[in-house]
Length: 207
Image: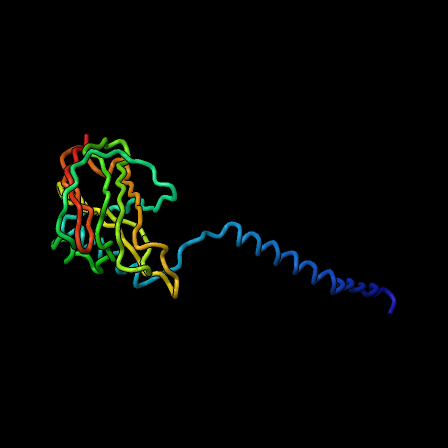
């Protein structure tokens, strides 16, 4: 009919190969950005988290301060400052600490060749080196905790069971524990290195 506009031509659809290419590129970019910038948060472990919180509350109520300290088995042990008069002490956690902890740690059986200084500077780390005996070849060093209450310091190495058929090379371990600078304030302390059968204790003056 005269005077009517001609119909517009429809745009041609993109070829399927270009659509697939765009999808692949977008997915690749999204995956890269997600993996690159995603925060690596530890998985939520309800039982462990609840136990840790309960431990913290109970320790605070009992007047204890807990500090995680470095514990390692040096491949080539180096001499550390000594001089402290090391004395034997009864084994096991002190009663006040034992009844406070939700789950008691696995302690070394006994200690030998304990080396520690009789004095320390609050601005410097305080090393303690010792040889300890574990119950069997299925235990390995897991870490160490320091429990501080007034002038009493309890150093508690912790061991854990090896999985499956794995065995430790020896039932004796040379361990170096390092108390971070600033943990111990100036003053006089009695330090106890806690073992299951026997502990060691010595006096420490912090300046």
